[in-house]
Length: 398
Image: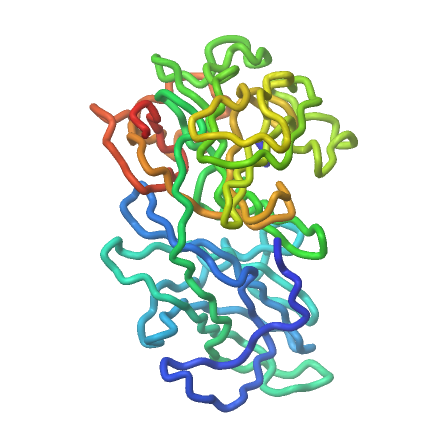
């Protein structure tokens, strides 16, 4: 498994208040804007409402700016703090534009950082229509052509609308034992941090992607030689259409990669990095993406209309992948990498358990029994999004 649009020529730094009354202009040397115009809230299997997005921060002054705290507030009531990031938590969510971890909360002149925002709300809480961001920063006290002594500044900026429309889909696979690997929403996971500069913007196409692998009845992800694709219980599984749609993109030219090894980096392109794949237009600006499909297994062609539950292809191990799995995501355009990933919910599934996060993080391979976190009986879930390492049963999905 592997380990967007940002075209703004300026950053919004105007102040906002609940009354929307004009506010005095304020010098804001560290400017900030959301990477996307809006984000969508979604319900996770933890019973909480999640919001996940990014902020872009740039220091416009010769004085280094040190980010101390970011507080997300309800735009209709700025006294209502929804989440905050400071100290180690702030630094762990701060990234470079080159998709690496930032080593300091200090941003030098003309430098840019990305702040990965992920927080939850109580499921009974009212979801705000818009949020704002209060920055507390040590930075230049006034415009200057030379570095100055930093002072403490605080300003509330960067409005972001919360889109209430969440795609709801059916399962991309059938049966039980499916594990949501590299799922949402920890900032250390491969999909969450995989920003890419392309088409003139910065994109997080895989923001909500899941790598689906399957446990056998004994709770194993691997049953034999790790270098043999047939040793993985998920290999060859039917891949299903999650909704009505039209096929708008595909690739079916690559043979399976030998598990445990990645393809030659010199052969990887934007087109083939995800191996054999399908892109399906679900309508309303939502596109489904299926990656790493088995060579020769794709049963549809560009232009075909598909229906929910239709078998599209077989799960394989093609492209930049170290073991057979289905990479699945929704996105806002047919571009598989130069697009913004979208959250969604499955209308119906059963939560069968949870692979312990620490056990998986400390494992050196996939061998062993992974069903220690299995529930006595699967629990029916509706309108939720599976979180990282959830064990999901799609058998009863309708």
